Length: 343
Ligand code: CP3
Image (tube, rainbow, N blue to C red):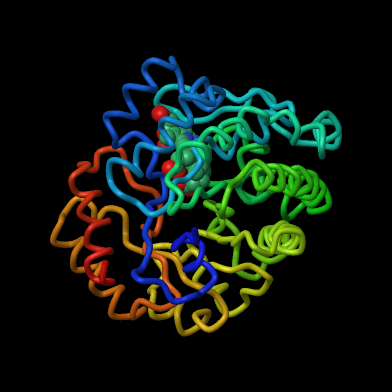
């Protein structure tokens, strides 16, 4: 059976415009909180294919999205490259021994060895594929090398990126070596996700906006394109979605062989359509906080439908859903996307 979501990623005409939500499998769902409480902590949940499968499928059943996104985290990659990941309550992710010099880089596990340690992810994908309805797609994902490197170098989330940026401007060779090593792992990791059964790839560059526009290609985009083109060459039937968050000034320079450009909420959809709509299918881009109000949600969905006209478009939020959004409002968003596009 052909999947509407996959057809839409390739720009084919579909009976309606499919929709999913970034961070749809997570804390706004009471059913998720229940499974997570049983797992003990978040990383245990990522490491347990049965439970990770269960929470991946929840938003499909509960809110009615057209695609599931694999439940995992971008940070399992550096974790398996030998950096010890922990999630500190109230503070987010932490790595105890960040990468700051050549010796640190040397101790990172690379390539096939790192990619083959992520077996719990591949097992989760296989389980999901057994249970996901035929007409729904499964999205696999990775962080972009830059976004992963920010955590690996800073050791945690950051507001200023000062340690990475010091490296960017005073020792760019080292930053490039780190990015290249991560890129090699990500290529093999995504390839193994495809071999395990994902239908679509999304590359999240959540911290793209930390890089000045004239340096964005050099330190992030070119590595994302390298990954996308490696996958497209070997697996042309698998669509690739690129999501660089917050880079409207770079839209003029976007290049590469991939299928869908994820538009974040700070970039006007009409502007993205003008710059990229002929070359890429566009995904997005409701401001996630509109989910707090059903009226604001409807207003935005109707405006997006007017701009895109149901062509070469996938509905989504322009970044992740927040934990305190009422489930009923998330359902309203999905229903409205389906209603305006004729489902
Ligand atoms: O539906 C989905 O998208 C679920 C799968 C998923 C998670 N993280 C689960 C998660 C995905 C695709 C991610 C990606 C991710 N992780 C990104 C890129 C996407 C984005 O939103 O920008 C980033 C930057 C991370 C790193 C990360 N993971 C942080 C900073 C945090 C802690 C901050 C927070 O939101 O609490 C996480 C933890 C995390 N990843 C949670 C979930 C559901 C919350 C853990 C919990 O408390 O249950």
